[in-house]
Length: 105
Image (cartoon, rainbow, N blue to C red; front, side, top):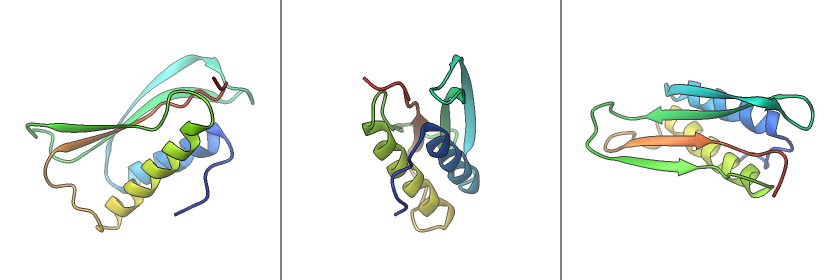
């Protein structure tokens, strides 16, 4: 597993790269504010699996504070394994919601 990302921008970039490599369907909702380092903020959702699945698993990385960085790293790790074919996306659709708040609690 990669180290926990040091910033929101790094966490988001790694998440999006891994989601893309896993052939995820990605949807992004931009936030109107900027982050601590003036970076763009957004909620990114990566959907993996059958579009017509009868069920879904929702995996949220974290909503505030530093625990979101660990959640992001775990999501990114799982998406990389999906991309490498180590985990089968068969079955329910998986929704990875990357929604960190870089401002803390």
